[in-house]
Length: 409
Image (cartoon, rainbow, N blue to C red; front, side):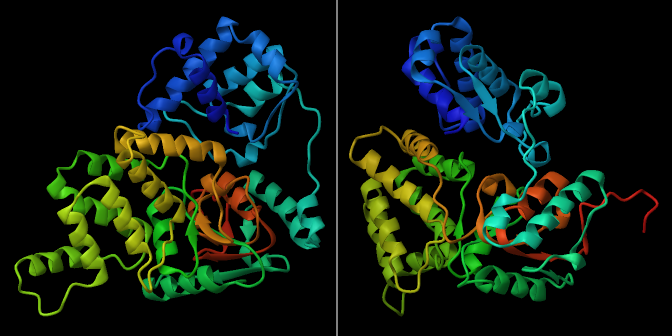
């Protein structure tokens, strides 16, 4: 469970003391407010006996990514319960809006004195990838001191394929690699630029059998659902088609809308396709029950592939919740589904695409790494350490994480 998820539970158990919170649909406002409210609960000491009776120990992993308020919450727990934190400052890839992550040396070490440093590559030794494990230990040092990693000197089980800058050629290389490299040898994580989530969806759309690992706040999905929620009944079809296009292949929004206009006027030379028939049924009855039925029906058409199954299921569940009266609006229904998903964790397919931000803490047999030359050393190190048996790096540059003086050419 994340610190934020734990905080949500505490403030929901003591709503009067926690005070009124903003709507959960706006994650950027909601979670900072939840953290502040939870810290207030702990500072009031009202929960002391309950917490001490409930927990015997507190263990917090990935501590290098804590923000100041989260750190303050853990420190308050440490005053009550024996608390242990684990982290690696070289894997500090998260940031917080209007607040930096805590300093490992200034904030963490003085509060939680160092007990031991784990520097043996057990994960790689367990699967017989000793050479890769030892190489990663050296790569860690090279990233920290700015020496950089030479992709022409990768260990056994790892490959580098150089891209040449030709868009069509590089796109084909990337598509083949993400779809077929090590397909039958084990699980594969495809990792791309964390600042371009739309790229992850396009890689999954154009690949074969790849699923997107979704971020927890699903900001873009929330925005689309809110637009649909506010739209007039006559405008809902366009928004629903856009949602369908964002999670499955073969939905051409403009083409379907153009054809529907022709069908309405009776000028179509060919009868409506299955996709168009489903769209016409929703247009005739644009309620949320029919919206869920349309999403399900579109996804089962021959040749169609849902590459964001998690979001597709959430949308169908959201429409059902409102249609059956369990939630008053799509926005609140999505907020409820998101919180349930936050507690349950994210399902990861055997072949999945995401970013260092989403896949940190996860591992697979192999990784395909894209856009690494655009990333900071912490992101590069996280990406390099996700695969236990091997990796394929696709890049234009030979060096990763190399600190270069301004006079270098």
